Length: 313
Image 1 (tube, helix red, strand yellow):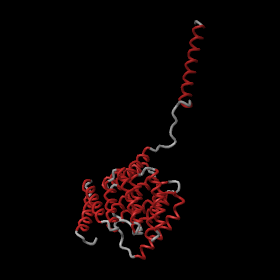
Image 2 (cartoon, rainbow, N blue to C red; image 1 turned 90 degrees about the vertical axis):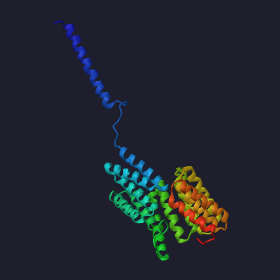
Image 3 (cartoon, helix red, strand yellow; image 1 turned 90 degrees about the horizontal axis):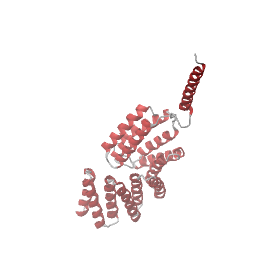
């Protein structure tokens, strides 16, 4: 047998083996190879996207759409078995029900959120769930519960105490902190401290404006207008409502626009500016009709008819 041929054959086999080992080593250890992720977030991130869409729909008064988005968010959260995402969906669902005027369903969602957060030992979500429940107990909101003045004050005191106790746990999440400031503002307004209510509302507005949460910023300024109007500061209320209208225009949010123009009409009427009030009511009705917001349109038209008929509202 030709020994040179054998040597060349053996050398070729050794070379092929070396190449194979090098390839295997590179596939498992080279820096250019993609690393496997430690954790997958696709389902949870998709759920958070649906929550954001649901929140925006609720702020726009599109409650059927909000429920569809949040139902999909819940499906994704359950499929991922993520306690934190489940809690966030329940908070958002409760908020949508509250905005629509169904306090009972809202509080049921928030109680479930609190139970979920507590069971998973999530301090931040436990804290914000308590703040949501405190906000749900306040007399402010639609529809306002049948509460006498003592009960209203007691609820406001509880809400203020809750927000102050839970706020330190929310500092790491600006949106949760903004919601807490808003709840605090509502409580202070009920307690008659216009200055403290305004400071808290401005804190919420600052966070939402910085993050370009336009609809939320508009609501914060709407709340500021309500605080100022209650205190008899009609020029300040006008200014706040103009700011709210500006944010809702940027967001193309007809629900917020109709509400702010209606509120502006009320402020102008209280200030004795009947022509300006009529203009604002008419604008509110026009926006609501164009956006198929029948209830809002009727409310504005009723105010306008009463004003033009010289009736008391």
